[in-house]
Length: 299
Image (cartoon, rainbow, N blue to C red; front, top):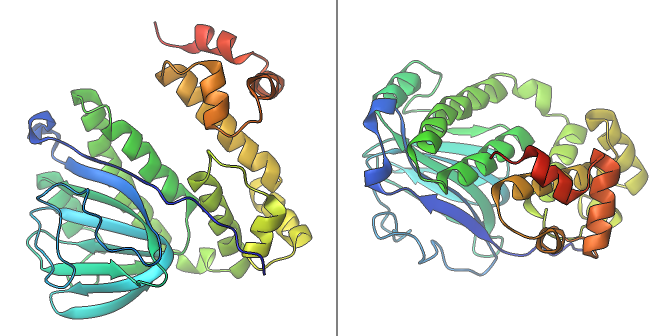
């Protein structure tokens, strides 16, 4: 079986206290993604001092931490209870609760995380299915949850009152999605669905790279013809079309929210040339990238 190699990366934001507003009822303190490669020390030393911990001794935080593992495996300890965790697992740690977690040294893992606190968060947690004796859930691979994390990471980088308000509301979305997927796990546990969800997450996490769909299907241990058939049945797109749509949607975001040139955006998203990017964008959207930027960018 051919092995697909993916670049290691991380993307996270720890929000400064002076930017937070307790009036929102929910305060998002940090959100991010980390790809921990095999044979890598954990946690990375780039974390702020208040969050860095020795995995042998653990830590306590004054906030909730929700962590989603999309690749790899590892171990979790909460107040002395030990758990094996792997892809598709979500766990939540409560304020002032001793805990530690670490990926297996040989496998590494991909983790998404969000830390939050506040009176409204306490109410949501207390009135949901979440309880101190049930903090680990297997919901499988879920692209909606990955997209939500990615959107939250983008918002956190703005670090202003409006973006923080949006982030606060997204915590409710996180918990609602988690509750729904957990309570309906029988609907998403089919093998074919999980293969497609895994492929969609890989596409999202490699949006700036080139992915050969035939090699991806080989990595997923499924024939390309079956992969393509199942993918189109579930999403309405072929894998190649879906990946292209992801790239073009990301291009729209960059055109509207950044000052990157057309050439820079094309290169960043893995197009072979700026001409290829512009032609593809025009064909799919009816506008050249520059015209889209002029017409749609807020004044």
